[in-house]
Image (cartoon, rainbow, N blue to C red; front, side, top):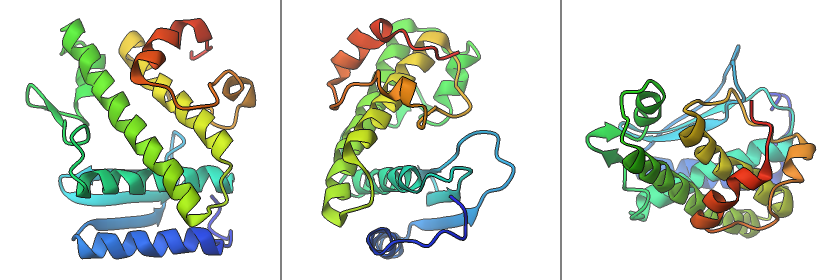
Length: 205
């Protein structure tokens, strides 16, 4: 999002509330422009140390940017609410951040356990998306819920892609409507995502 775009009142209200929650819970906030990025980067919420990292991304899509921001704030909600699925951060002493790279590099070869781990991540992100939709409605954000759901579904399928092909992509095509139109128009169950992945025949690579 370009730094000279005016923030609308609804999104500004969410931003203020998020910063207030972070201050009250001693969560660091990093809201800075991010230059020369290689992939479509929005942000992350880290628990060690506690910090919400959010960058001005290289997208000019206002609603896409705030969809992503809202999503990250819902990870904070999961953490503060002590969500059971969110707290599943470790698998055999490998952190949620380190595991994918270990898996991609062949350092973790147990197929059954690795699939379960990616399924746990998918479930965590799905819970987050359910919260995101509620927050979009609560704040009356300038985000089309129907489009957000399809973008969220693309993100859910991406976790299965990473497990199946042992690689990550440098940015998902959230603005590619040829791909989005293949996405379900409602959030699915974890099992439904796994069962329907191959039938979508997406051109990921």
